[in-house]
Length: 93
Image (cartoon, rainbow, N blue to C red; front, side, top):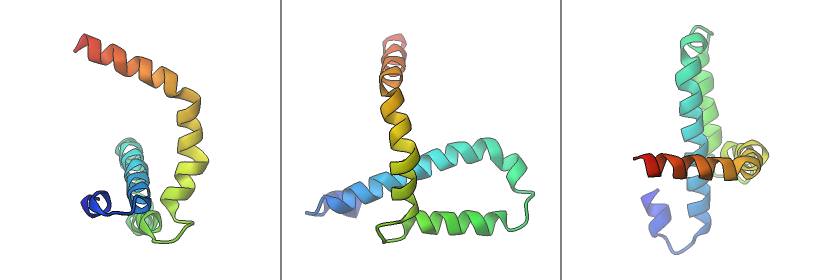
């Protein structure tokens, strides 16, 4: 990520920051579902393949696909509520 930020091209910044958004949401979802999912055979192999797909240096990698088809539309639909909630948290803190 640091190499992407420090490079002269901003295209790779977008790629890695998109990956970190998808990875962060994956980690949050996994923290709730890991108690059930680790019982499935090949769960860790599937998780590894999923993360490799998300990092793959191709235009159709997982982070781009998931971000543009699921995360971005959800965020654009609910961004005002999220901003209001975050401002309420900051004033209470």
